[in-house]
Image (tube, rainbow, N blue to C red; front, side):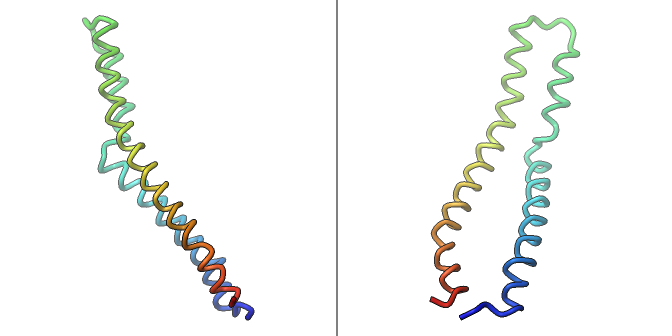
Length: 100
């Protein structure tokens, strides 16, 4: 059974566009909430601080980067879960569209 024109429009047109927009908006919102964008400012302030030894600066920079790393590790885990789910559901959706 061939997919109707309406089904093709939804699956190949609307769904990818909505997914891309929602993904971009969600990434920005999560980045703002987690403070991911502030890391560059923090690192710049650490470099500008006077009276710090190189070891102290290194320790401060490591701590500032650790907060950003946790956010990207979480984002990577969510992406992996999403891809695994899509991998399991993909064949079922494909079979449904092709009518097998």
